[in-house]
Length: 166
Figure 1 (cartoon, one colour):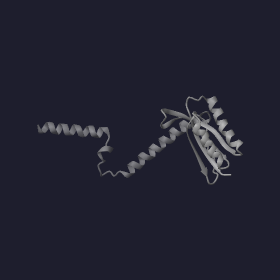
Figure 2: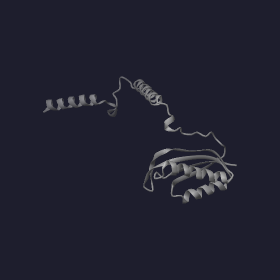
Figure 3: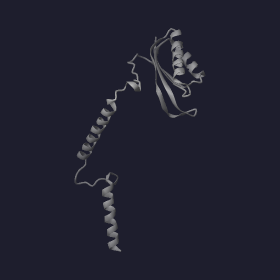
Figure 4: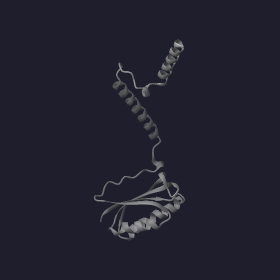
């Protein structure tokens, strides 16, 4: 049986309890047709990259399954007629691959944001060091690279020169 990946977006007006029922219903469609669900789960409610039918956010659901080729066609038909699913995509993979999932927000340890901030600080320091190594002390930096203080000093020099000439 071929391996498939289906992602669908559930309308934001649907509450979490009803979303769980929708997920179970589509999983049941695959299983009733003789397919095997490898993984199925709700990701999260996220803002869409662009509005779909004036909807700004939706609940993302991802499902990996093995089934005969007519099962994705039936899922596609059901997704199209459902008012609760605003967008869907079903992809057939030639080879099964490692199924990666997004962990729920509650499972992320609290140290992670601090570690990310520290990693960001280290990255900034490395970028500054690289920038200093690249710049030559004899060359003048481009105007967009000059700091506010340098620009202000040049403006003062220009103003004083103009006053002397007048």
